[in-house]
Length: 284
Image (cartoon, rainbow, N blue to C red):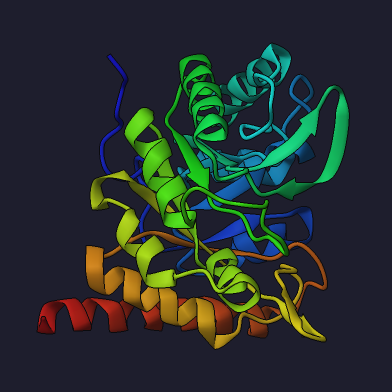
């Protein structure tokens, strides 16, 4: 029998921020950071943890371990050593969960270097679901799956993005990390039906939400995590909360780190979007 984790990851509430060494001081001193997310690929699985992360542990700040290279949507099972490394890091961090992407990253030993979309076919969905089940069995904490941004789609999809998400949830016990910035990017570049994706996420399977910035270059919108958050992801966050209620939401920033005042403003904009969603839900 597959294991289905309860709603939310333990302790995640309010607004969080992706932990980066460049943001460690801000996270240490800012008020209202409800939780953090730490990139697995930035940590040594056997060496000492960075001192700022130890301080967060001591303060009891909830931590999610976030991976970008497991390759759950690849054509081969996730490597046991990768799963073991994630499990060790999750235990060392005291992580409340692990999140990874619904992405294709390697085949036959060749690395794509990108988080590529999963082919939306029944065969690819079955492989994806089996890989997710293997990961769930290897990890000591719940696994949350993140939708990715893409600049292309594989030919002749059998179902849409919402269908892929629904299919993997039906076949596994995993939770969802819904990235509204990625969804916004796919809506602009590929015409993805955002409402269908929002409605495909059951309330009880939603772990938390990602928000991030991007930029238009020519005809395409790029999800960069290095630019200010536009209005689109915040609108989607508000709509999600109006449907399912309060959700933990985390801001990602990976480059061109802004002044503390700008970061504080983006976190506050997220809180305002959450509040608007709650008001809409209460009014309905």
